Length: 338
Image (cartoon, rainbow, N blue to C red):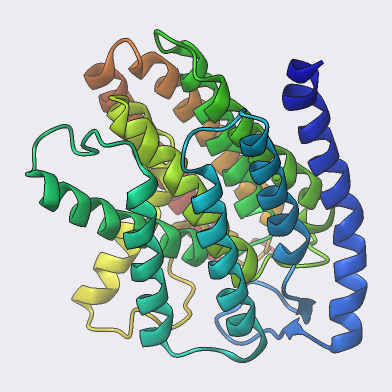
């Protein structure tokens, strides 16, 4: 019965609860007129309620805490859930009125610095750095990951699809290692269930957006699972699974820095944003990304046994995905025949 509770009932409750609560949150946001209004850099054309993370994060965190209370979650789960909850509250304030870049970044640094205390004692960077430097580098990497998770939440369904892909990939890797990690698998299953439930409202054309209250805590929670995977020795799968997000966000940021732009401001320069082109087909772009993520999940599984060859293939697969998105952007920019 305990196994049924952990593996089936909790994820199903999160899925159904998120799908149901999404409608309530949507109606409440409309009444409060909390909208993401389109501007020149937006990827949508009409105002859309922002703050759908209120339907996802509380249920996911509650499920994590309940699993931890029953002994179905790794050590540190409750602490990480608490930090994620604090990030959600701060991000909700940002969704409502906006916080300065400095205050947001400070909060993210504090959250990641506290979060490393709940990682395994083994080094994330596989002994390449001294222990203190390993922890500092881990915190900085975590800050970048939760921010890029927020940056990449720019079109319908993309964060739901990425969350499901990362969670499924973590589950696959956790079950392929020498001693299958059922506790991590259960936490990842909750994340996938929450994202799938919210997809009911966020699929194109989206009726509601996650907002910072959703994307920032999701990045923090998934970052913890990935870093814990790396600390357990599975550094290659931990790098492969989010490789598309890492590549798109990092390359775009580097280009903006080289052009001396205000990189913290909203823009439409990510590969997935430019791929929307003139037709604005969010579904077509997300399907391309989902296909790339399926390849990365398979390669992450192979990386458990052959890390370097699998990582090489993953880099090639990510380059192909970026090229496909670029090709779609160029095709959309061409004049259409009369």
